Structures are given as structure tokens and as C-alpha cells.
Image (cartoon, rainbow, N blue to C red; front, side, top):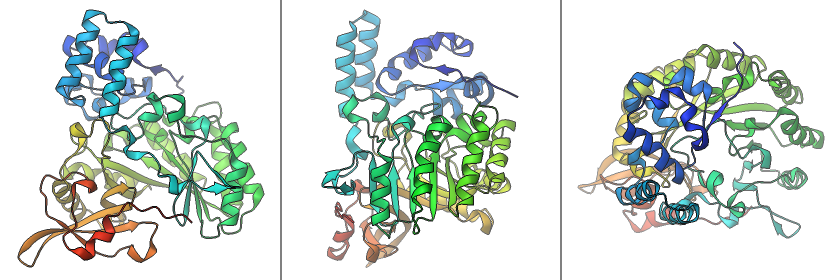
Length: 433
């Protein structure tokens, strides 16, 4: 079925007939919270995925639409009071900015040390966090088909011009990767790089392929398009061209990995999503799936086991189960790390070996990707066991280290090293390559 893409945001919220049927307090919450966090959804999500008869408890509704509890009570009361009293646009904007600054918006800002220096100039929009992988943020891809309510890059969509991390300088990207033989992958990320038109994306990719970098093995694309707009791969005017681009990369001897954010089994239950997955895989590209563990969305082990089984059935590789980042509405979505570990363990233990490619619960921190692996007693004391799956320091990868047991800890910065020899694993790394 062909679909015309239609975007909904705060300006046309009332045009969604299903929203008009919601209780008044829920509609007010959309209007209030949507002023602080970016709000954007589309007609596919609204018409095909959300259970509107049970909207207040529906996980897909909560993925797309903000709710009152995503703001702290004092923040909500401040903005709702201003909305009700008809406060001026300038006053509302200032209040919203104040609240955003209190929600740790800088938590995922890229460390200066990971920005490559080319000809003595730091590259804004290119990141080299780990030896093997360079991230590229194409300027035209710093938008999404919809905005996840938990998005850790929410500042990209609500900040000032200087807050938007992006680049159009593919020549500097090529120059840098060519000079660094440890780099094996280029990851196009955002936003969503598959939001941009194929001809623009191809302009970047073609230059990389023309450069014929011998040590470059793979090009990755981080995307939510499979679940938020599967017609990107089916009936969009440039859908076929996108698949041809994947085939072209593979024909040049490079691997294509589509890294899909899939948060719930229902997202890959529709005919459109399943056809999109088949079309992508028919090019020879691989799809890997990752998602944070989210309260109100997927915080039960049976949801995860069902998700991993269905991904494998459709030929998608379960990749990461993340811990929700320490920014934005994390107080609404986050779970204690020890609870996350139990959910992961129970789900993992109930699936077959071909589902067990997934790694979790993992935290993407400035230090690297940290996995919580166990709770054990050490010298008669409960402790948390962790290791790095990825870090700038190769000698620390998969080395077990210990943290003081904390049943309330939700993020890496909530933890403390157990022993002096564990302290080095908690440093804020600043390695350059």
C-alpha cells in the first residue's frame, strides 16, 4: 500500500482525530510537555501502530506522544500555568529554556577529544570515539520521521543553531579515515541519515566509495525508519534508489549494516515493516537491532524475548539492549541497573542461541560501552561486576571491574569503584587517535 508521508507536531495536533477523542487532561499534557521536549510523529504511527482504545497505557503511544509524567511536577505546573494564563511567546520560550537546562541536555555532548583534528582544525560533525569506528553526522540527516520520547539526542531538535552537531564536509571525513588505518567502519548517524533524500545520501556515499579506502570494511546507517516509516524502503519516490545504493556499496566490497532502533515487537508486526525488512535484506545488507530498556514501553522480560525471537525470524540480528541515557525524561523511562540486569537475564535465558547475539544491559558513556554482567559477593559484600564492550583503551576491553552495590543506581555516574584498582575504569577518558 502506498502512503503519503504526513507529519504531526504541536502546530497541527488537533488535526489528529484520535487525539481529539483523548481526555482533556491528556490533551493538555501533550501541549505542555511537547513544548519542552521535541514532538513529532506521522500518519503511519498514528493510523497503524497505536492502540487508541488504550492510549494511556499503550507502549507505542508513549514512544510517540509525551505525557505529563515526563516532566517533574514543578516543571509541568510552571508551563501549564503559563499556557492557561496566555503567557507571551517570549515568556514561554524563556521558561522552556530554563527547564531544558535543568534536564542534563549536555550529557551526550561529544567530548572535544573525540573530534578529529584535520589540518589543525577540529571537525564538528565527525566523531572518532573508538579506534575502529568513525561517526559522521550529515547535516541533511539531522531530522527524523518521528521523535522518540526517550531520545538522548533531543537537543539536536530543540536547541539553538550552535547546538546542532552536523557536517557536510565529506572530504575531511575521507581524508581523516584514509590517514587512520585502524578505522574499519563509518557510521552515518543523526538524527536519522535515512530521513534525507537518497540522492543527497548517495552524494556522500559515492565520494567515500570513489576514494577506495582499502582498510574501510563497512558503512553503517543508524535509523528508525524501518519502524517509524517503512515506506521509506517501499513506496517513497526514491525507495528503489536507496536499495540500489546499498547494493552499490556491497558491490564495491564493503559491508552494509542497517542499525535499526526497534523498541517493541509491535513495531515489526505490520505488513509494511516486514516488507521493508525483506527488501533491505534482499540487497545483501545486514540489519542489526538495538533499543534502550524503557519503563512503560518494554520493561518486562517477556517483551524482550518476544522481540528477539521475532527479529531473528525476520532475519534481523539482535544487537544491543541499552540503558536509557541520563538526560531528558530519564526519570520517567529509567530503571535501576540491577532491575535491568534481571530483565535482561530472564529474557536471555528463555531464547535460543541464535537470539543470544544481543548484549545488555549496556550504557553508552563517555568512557565507552559498559555492560553490567553480574551481582556477586566479594569479601562478604555485595558488588556489581561490569566490563567494557568498547572503549578507546584496548587493554580495558572485557576486563572485569567492580562497583559498590547500589540498588537505586540507574547510570554509570551513580556508581563508585569498589577498590582502588577499579578507579581507572571510572575515569572520563579523553584519548585521541
